[in-house]
Image (tube, rainbow over all chains, first blue to last red; front, side, top):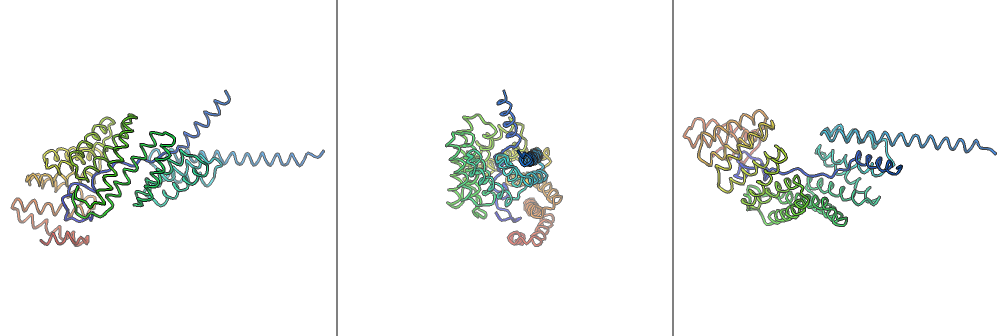
Length: 46
Length: 368
């Protein structure tokens, strides 16, 4: 959409076709990995 | 027997092991601090720690993959998409090399999201497909749902990226409508899974974006149904930002259904929440929408009240385009009331702003 102060009716009521939900990024956690590793070695000792 | 040689070599090995061990610990500590900082939203500081962790290095490729991935995500949140792309690519290459399928699926998902943001939709589709294929192969329902949501977002963004200057929802070129219909299909497929999984947060996100897709397709009743679901879920979680978005999107849909009073009520809730959240830009947009809605209802006194509120915020935010729009709307409302002095004052102010911002179409409108 071109930004002009002479707004069309769609520009009057929405910005960029409605407000979107956030993206879901995949998380790879170092702390989770570390905890699993630690738990694994504790379990192995037992 | 001469044992001095083997003693020296054992010591050297011990020393080397000790150095490597210290490096691993340092790298891990730096990465954990980077992770903590990103969790609290300090992505800039998080990036510094992750980059320091890479400098120290690690032989643990799972840790390295997590660092690449989180660096990519941090840069994504900082809107540095070139860097985000670089690290998500490193992560993808690494996970493929070590045969980590789950890791590859995640890297593909993140890469797809980044490619979508920079408008490289065809490449984004390939990444989404890989994410989906792996999730299906390993029977990972959560992964499948996430891939389908990302797919929907790619087609939604693709539809919106095509220039549809001034066209109204439901009246876009066929290319746009096709992309939007595909987006809706992917969101529906995602909903089937997340409903089975009982994942309400994921349902909320999908209903929000499905509502926007239906709105752009011109299916305003369906848009209302989706946004009402989004609103319900936002309230369940006490998520006021999502609640505000849903009210605003509902207001937009009711405008196109011709139910202006209902739209005004939804915009008023948007305004209340924007004030609670101290989001001045959204507050300005809500005032502008309310001003326009009362203009449609021919209640020009109220329309002027909201357009003046919009004008004040636009001036505070130094938003010249917003200021120009407020002046244009005020000029129209005063004309409708027969107050020609005020109408002329705002029309002149509008013209002045258009000249300053180089807004040719606004300038032509102002001269009329």
